[in-house]
Amino acid sequence: MNYTIRQFAEMFHATEHTIRYYTDINLLPCHRDGGNRRIFDEESVNWMQGITCLKGCGASIEEIKEYCDLCRLPESEENLRARYQIILHSREQAHRRVEEAKATARYMDEKVKHYEDILAGLIPDDSNPMTWTKETRPQLHEN
Image 1 (spheres, rainbow, N blue to C red):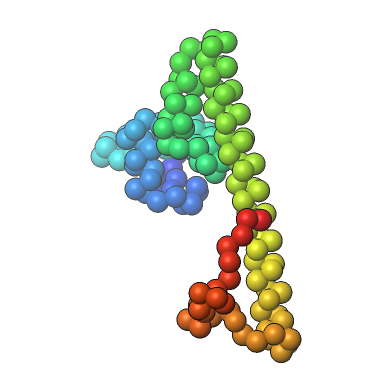
Image 2: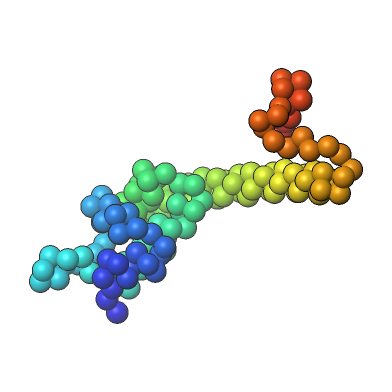
């Protein structure tokens, strides 16, 4: 099946600008129709799924491009090991993002409890930054 740039962007919750950029830097293959418009096929879908996964792990465009470039090279043990290293790094980034998300969720759980205590009249409302002083301002702490 073939997709227009609009259809393709919608499939991946991306902007048309992003899809154009990916094709322009040779991350994402596409074909052109008679009017020189980009047309995407199932191979494009495969590549975009890989790009989306790496991006979701926190990989930079440069890392994703390196991975895609390696995929286009002839198969070799060296090539496979290079791709493997990129995947290992991306996995580490994904796990780091999970831990950051967990820390954020714990912080927000504390905030919800704090607001519930305020709403229940157990503590005064100290949640508005406009009323904080240097002494009453919440201190940042690592989770």
